[in-house]
Amino acid sequence: MIKDTRLILALDVTDGQQALRIAQNVKGHVDAIKIGYPLVLAAGKGIIGEIAEMVPVIADFKVADIPNTDRLICEQAFGVGASAVIVHGFTGSDSLRTCVEVAEIYGGNIYVVTEMSHPGAIDFMQRVAEDMAQMASNANVAGVVAPATRPERVQMIRSIIGNDIAIISPGVGAQGGSAADAIKAGADWVIVGRSILLADDPKQAAMDIVKEIKDAIDQ
Ligand code: O7M
Image (cartoon, rainbow, N blue to C red):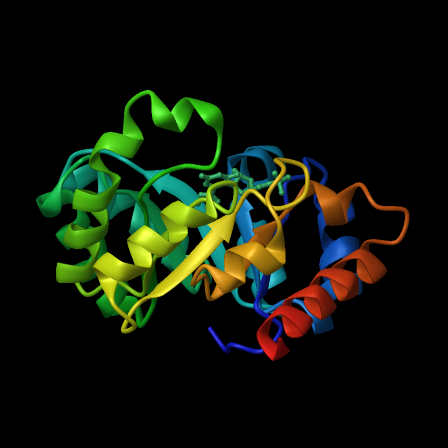
């Protein structure tokens, strides 16, 4: 993924035509578009390829199964044009290794979820987030997902993984996190959905976030 705007749009809509319109509108202002279950279940997996013609697509299937099932899921995602697939870390190193192997075959990337951004992540995930970050780092993935709602955790995860792999960080805006704080804490990209999707002018909303990030870097 080219590091330019440092913004990834979470395209959480359930209408394929609307998704294509939004992608067309914001494509110059985001480095990638993340597509997950809501859109794929509504519009079919072909939507990944349609959007990938405009902007690199990260398939957010939060893959979390035994290695064989993970392999089948990753093959489906990369096979229709995804550049990257998001997988959970808690299933362990053999599951993750299988996803990385499939990514290598397709020339794609894997991002591993460590600690999620919502309050419930503190119940279970936070306890093992640092171990999952270490495992991800050992597995040579492209990056990890860490919470913009807790910039201090982004910083902690950065200290574990070093500078060789990326952090992509959701939780900005609707969930209360700030793009500037996440970037300053060590995130390479922020992932933003509703603050852009529900804005009167999604393109302007994306441009505003990109400016906030640039200002934070220049500070
Ligand atoms: O900006 P929002 O809150 O509307 O959307 C955030 C997006 O990021 C949405 O697609 C979530 O599924 C996703 N996300 C989180 O919000 N928190 C996480 O911890 C992890 C993700 C995610 O993208 O995981 C890969």
